Length: 209
Image 1 (cartoon, helix red, strand yellow):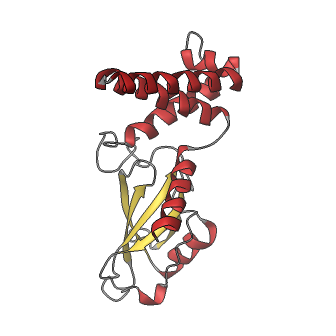
Image 2 (cartoon, one colour):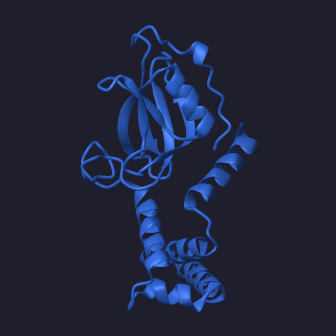
């Protein structure tokens, strides 16, 4: 979890009659997943447990995302907007967010842009757990970390050679192969892509903060 302190007393609770809209965004893909409301108690529980908790205006009670479905949202950070009356909540997901079995409550489309890396990571994780036959990823996992690391090294060399040769197309293709095999290696080492992103974020803050 990122170390971002949020002062509840600086939030504008009066505007929403004690409730503040919370926009939920996937930290790794930046896809907007849903929107809910928090009161002071829901905010406190979310910060304390790391599990995203809302106030249900329909049921008139607190509820933690995933308490019945198992599809929970884990807190990464919370940021207020410029008026202190809305929260942007970045999360790690476990399962689908929408009750219609979609990743997002805002439609069925996948996360744009760099979100494909998170989607690919999820597929590699599925291969790691299920090990389907005739799968290249399964074969890599069964050959072990040394073979996967070797593939990462080979693809890195291919990227270097293609770039030196001046071929943008070959460099692009080899870079895609390198990213793919790096994701497999990270999964073999049980390291999430988001943790690598957090490391980069920390380095950036230290250098430019």
